[in-house]
Image (cartoon, rainbow, N blue to C red):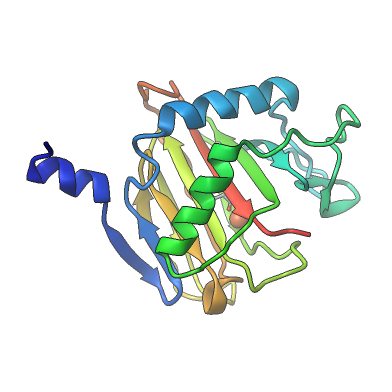
Length: 215
Ligand code: SIN
Ligand code: FE2
């Protein structure tokens, strides 16, 4: 039997961030143990690394990928590859629990039949951030983006289609999922400098999983 509090925290809340963009509070709570186990298995095969921007700067956020395609950057530019450039092997397959979470979250947000083929894994240590950017290296902008937060909280910035558009700031906590698409698909977004802290499941860091249809 569930009491009202349980029911409420199980369902979570769905909050509009912008037109065609929603935050599903705590949507990933309940399966976070499995998500983190799968995440660690991916990282064991395709280690987190600080990729280099086309301009030659090492990114402060450490990244890796799973799925058929992985997002990479180096001096040659931003793109998707089928192989991990470190090992030359295909990126680890997307864990079933990742794909099903992304499909369910997209459906709740109004995007049916989302089948991601790419999952970018970001690890934020205290002091790191991700500048405002658009996700635009994908071939198909009709599919949404699904973004899962695990571990330490972070301030997420969500703007419009132009870099200088007004930005909405929202705190993303462990288990929160953001979904954006359609008119918001190319919205600028980023993550403020991570504050130090300690999370019982991830320690001193935040992980973000970004699911996309890239190919
Ligand atoms: C991203 O835009 O790649 C990640 C967003 C986030 O970490 O919440
Ligand atoms: Fe992004």
